[in-house]
Length: 525
Ligand SMILES: Cc1ncc(COP(=O)(O)O)c(C=O)c1O
Image (cartoon, rainbow, N blue to C red):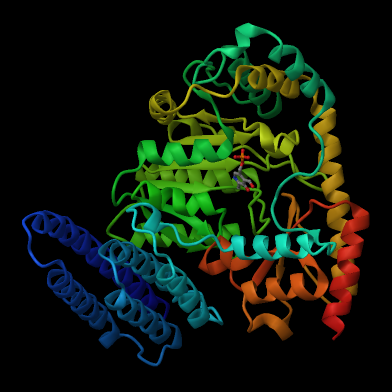
């Protein structure tokens, strides 16, 4: 059965690919014809039907040989059908184009699910596809970005607060603590110097690059050249989005675990790459899936995009995981990007490893380090991209067109953070660990047992059985409405995040206890 599923899975991937490529080619042809005045509606209708037919045809072939009673396969097919139905109803050409892309992505996710059956697949598909339908903008790239799921909760939170209700906000991963005092002081000094008011350099000032390189040498034993192997970025998000933009081209496959931090998925979509999401019940299983993908897919991934400690699942890895994934990627000539946003948030003595500690990792990998969580500097927007020269060169080139770097006084103050604030990082880490303990034991007492994370600033909680069928968005709305506690719905992190909610440890212990009490009462009803 596993082999049949493997065949099915590859066929789904290929079918989705063929459809998308043809549709994209058709769209270009359409744009061309439109300028010559040919009726657009009719042409698009024909194109759609042709591609729907082709997809059906392609999907039929493996299904004849497969077990037609396989419920995951049937549900996957139904979802693709539903997508195609919705597609033909869509009012605008650009909406259809975006939907075709989304459906293909969906087909690929569904294909992966053939290996890991998921309970409420129909709901997941419906939700994702409908969210595309509700989008009405016409801009080409914007159409590819579905409405932000977290906005629903944010809006409810704002309304409750406007009505003077006391919402405990465990939603967004936005650190509540202050930036270390010496960093603030240095910023104030530096800002008074007019020389720092000019444009800075987009790659970052040399002294800051030298400081991050020093940190990697002392903390991880990794040697980097501050000129060619380190660049300062406007936070990790800038690094991720622009690196993808720089090195990924149309159709390049980028593999990442799902659920994931949204830019990991949509950065690829924006770069017109092919976001290939693999489930990650555990990092080891993700690795198995990746190996399987290499063995069965005709198209080799161009990049693997990972992040440990992982947001939102909180999964952590040891250095051996990185050794394995570097070896695998190197064998196939695939680039690796490791987003190390939670580098310093390991608990109970766990120290998250850097991928650059693996010998030879620099040949194929870069790591992205962020000041946001380690030093409570989320609003300052400072991060780094480190490692592979070629990728860093590409990022530097694209950034030289896009920005003039982080405001220089912020860069100067960041040097102080890296050089003098190790104790502050330790305190920040300890604060999250205590809050984690309060939340985990409180949830446990409320009859909601959740695994305690070894890292990040989050708790990833499966929705209690009684509410699971509602889905994560509805459950999050209920928590806000009935318990005045804001959390992030798992679906916001991708289709495989369904069935979970994420708590961010950004309220103090007292407020966290207040949230637990309210959740306890809500669950009792
Ligand atoms: C995995 C991950 N990467 C990157 C970021 C953003 O980091 P930065 O503030 O450096 O842009 C976050 C923030 O929540 C994150 O969770």
